[in-house]
Amino acid sequence: MTDSAVSLFEKLVHADPPGDVPVLFDTACVIGGSIAGLLAARVLSDRARRVVVIEPDDVSAETGPRPGVPQDQQVHTLLPAGQLWLERWVPGFTKEAQDRGARLVPGKGVTSLNGVPQAPDGEGHRLLAIGRPLLETLIRGRVTSLPNVSVLRGRATGLRYRDDAVSAVRYVATAGGDHSDGGAGVLDADFVVDAMGRSSRLSNWLGQGGYDQPGLERLEAPINYATALFERPVDVADLEAPGALALFSPEYPSGGVSVAAANPIEDERWIVMLMGYGDSRPGRTVDEFREACAKLPSVFTTATAGAVIGDVVTYHQAESRRRHFADVSRFPARLVSVGDAVASFNPIYGQGMSSAALHASCLAFYLGGGPDLGSAAREFFRLQQVVVDAAWAVSAGGDAARLDARDGTDVPEDIARQRWAVEQITAATLLDGDVTRAFNNVSYMLRHPATLADPALLARAVAANEGAAKAM
View 1 (cartoon, rainbow, N blue to C red):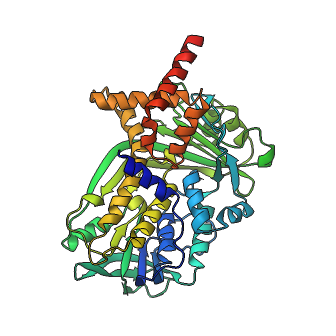
View 2 (cartoon, rainbow, N blue to C red; view 1 turned 90 degrees about the vertical axis):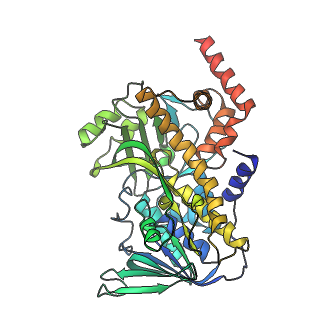
């Protein structure tokens, strides 16, 4: 990865709202009202006279689960990159979340590998621990309170084109929405954002319109989540450990648990997640859940000691996916795609919401660069590819290494060297705070993964690991 990509990534991380800028569009349409769509709508609110978000789910209920977000009952932690972006573009968001019961938990000491905690990184990063439904509710409330942003309850069914550009979105209104009869409608739009998520139908629509479809890359990552809520009688300030992320390598005996997380969230609750790969399905019942947690670091026993709230909620995802929009030859103008519609990763890395924020930054950079709106948004997709490549390197790289180890696959020498370097750095995070800092900055999406290839950093990691081995 070039230095220019690393620099660009960090500019996107630190992007600020543009201030007083010219309006480019009369109407902009965002298809999908989840987090990626809402953040895109926030960016477009500076550039369009009105922004219409088409969303099929009823989003009037406070903090409830939504059919369109099947994973929303699982653990979500807003990484520092996403939190900082939100705080810049939606000022006061963090305080509002805290007022509603969300908690900022220190990253220091939260993560452990095979039961050993990371060395403190000295940065003082704090992670926003919050339930996904509340997080989405707060973002939606702030974005839709903007005077030029509205939600149209309906299901998008296709696009219309004029002069090789998107000109309108076809939809069917959802009963109880803007058209209670559920009738078909057409929304004229000067710019359209596909934020339909992992199951986006945009590729089909492009093919039907005579345009090229983006290539779809798939990586097997069969994961099984189990999440449960428990009463938390102790205030976060009085907890010995205010949260935990426990990672286990395949050879470590953890009862089939590969990743476990515990977050203190709103309404005096713990949300606890267990994740297993392949055939491992830990904690499908409350008894199984507590039994599995008893074998993990003590914070998990603490978190599951209170009364359980509701049932254990499971979630399965078979693969990670990315669509290669940057490689498409024939593509309509005034159309982009964001969020899981572009790339959906193994959720254990927590990148989804922060990736959505960085996609919104790409949109802001693109619109602020004087784009040729009569041509396909290639500059946007070039910017976005930098973000997707970075996130994919972290999540897909780890999953590919696990699959190759499982299957006994021989990999090219350069890939083997890269994986050895990652192993050295990961192991050294348990020993050296400087290595931890560099690693966490990448994990938190504040720095590009290429920064971990610094020879001096790798040498420091190797020295720390060799020193620990000699001391044993």
